[in-house]
Length: 248
Image (cartoon, rainbow, N blue to C red; front, side):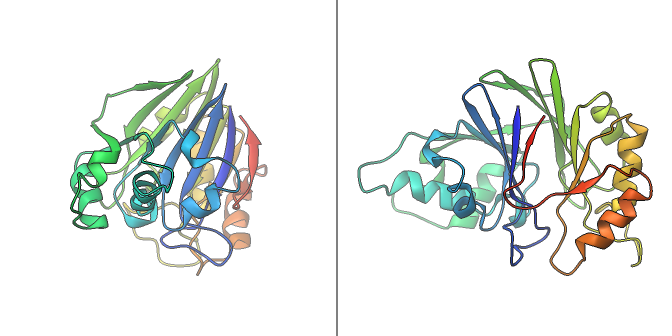
């Protein structure tokens, strides 16, 4: 499997990166984990968007799902004709959220051009040769992380979450983890929302994982501070950036 970071900015797009979006490729299959503000534009540097096989949404905040509306437009209004629908998987409420975020249309609209499925805890999906399993995490709204498995390799994406036992358990034995680190140790810590670099690194250590990429860093935080927080616990931790490519 290969990971390409399309967008790594947290909460809203930054000057150098769209909001959350991660491309996972394996044996000709292309899936996205999240599709936040501005990500569809950057994605086109790395992939023909009509070759997407599926989009998995971790939760329904705009910085993780806003550009699904843009994906709909790209399918519905192509000058050479309507493109085939793309599968979108999200938590309960996804269909209504996508309809509301795009607005009313005089045709079947978003749900007429995207094959939307809503998952719950315990569901698992196979797309091409990849198995994608959502698991609940600790965020201010219902949120999920994803475990992606193929050919004996395992990748885990945290979504938005505070440190929690569910993330540790899902990450055990993973070859690579991509954990959010929207908070910094130098500022007051609000529970049940996000991790810091330190808590993300400690979660990786608790799960026995050596390869950690930190992401979802808001433009108001310094990535160097986030990285220092993490490397105090796990020296090999690195920070994601738009365009980063990693073999899993």
